[in-house]
Length: 332
Length: 307
Image (cartoon, rainbow over all chains, first blue to last red; front, side, top):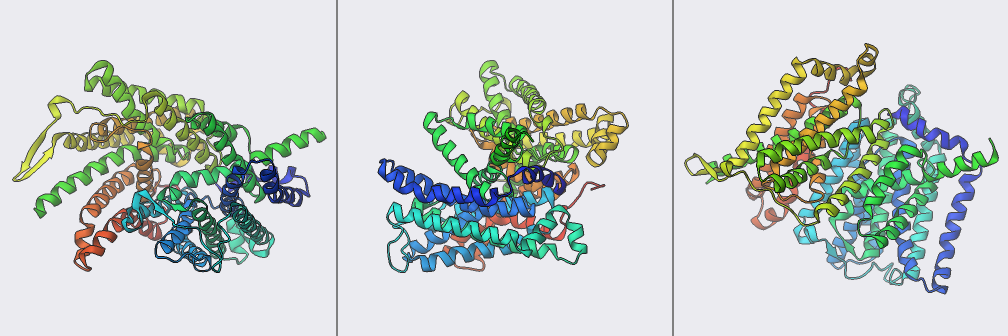
């Protein structure tokens, strides 16, 4: 399995333009920063909400890419952390605590704790067992949330108002919420980027290519993976905090296994192991969903086979496909 | 009431376990032999139920509907294998997950288009409806006993099939040493197709049998799929015996946990928090069980030899 993952990632790494790692993220964040003035000027204000959502899922997708693309940990329970972060906001709000200075640390702490406890068990397993056990822990949080009758159970929990930041209602206007989400995405992206290029990230990547060799070199791979798992969980918890505030509602559906699957699709769609690919993938997925669901209520009938085709035909996601086209264009 | 209730819930747990086994058996075979993660296995269970409803409305006969639905499930499984899965063997597990996830999205929606989003139902055959008095004060629906019986019969047949037939021998060999089996001149790709179609048929059978007591609706396979995964992970991927034992274990633990969690918690805490915490604990139980099993034995209870 480790071998196969490497085989998927390698071609796109080689064919990518050397400066793509700087240029593409700069273009992405530049466009995201310029979107609100453009949208408001052309009276497309709804784009703000849509792209806030895109950025929130991009944060979670970046975290997932850290695990999928750099540590070869195929986790199928990432949505659980989004849900935990969201429920931290919802439950605190229902007790009258609506400030981000308390809710955000709580969301991060809950996500970190859950990642630590489940990570200790999950990371003992490999390959298919790892996929299944993360899936099962994700389902566990889903069913637990569904059984939480005092906090809405199946129906979910409505949040009376968005979190304040140190008493100021900074998240209330769509515009300021948009820029808060953008700042969070930038922070999450840069953090992941730093981790990936650091010694820590090199150990993770080394363990992805050849865990036995890294162990022989004296690295306790398990510990590095556990730390990565906890960090990815916390970043997803941040996404959950933002999602709860964006929708002013939390529900068990946030942590369904289908949601975890969608996150994996976002990462793969953009191109695994690049981090910015996760952002492109999240945008592509959510915008396609938005567009197709406007065309027909049965949009999944189109979307499902498209996914199968992408997997069968295009390796390396959208970025890989673009790099491939660019390579042919240059005549390599 | 307590003993009777316990017996009823044990039978219910057994029935869930048998159902899980029917689904997990195909899943674990496909895993074991082809190293392929098939998330779409749950959809095949759903399709089995829908096929049965459709054929019943044409023939008006449960047995005919059952046989036709099984044939349809088999054909459908083989077609899926031929069109899509065949191209994904040997690829990364992640590719399996995404492709089969796409199939789930498609089929759940397609079913909605063809049969509508409203739940459908399949009547219990006349002769097997009603309840039977098992002992004093214990009335139990005949159909549930039929499910248990037929599930156990399939398990026995499967045991004979895998252990005492030529194809079974190839399946066992293929699950541990597929390249060598191929090198010995066995048409491994035909074996894969057979195993896949057979697994799809078993899942379809589970869907038909459960259709009379559950509502047949889009997405009905998604939850049971996760339970089936828990079963094969606990049992050990690729092991039919492990799947059988783990399926019964999960069925019993889940059913009994849900029935008695509140009562047990009331022994140690006040009734009102017990009523709140009980259901949450009950729904976590099987996942905790899985976590404990995997912590102690990372490859499950009965790992297939050679892995």
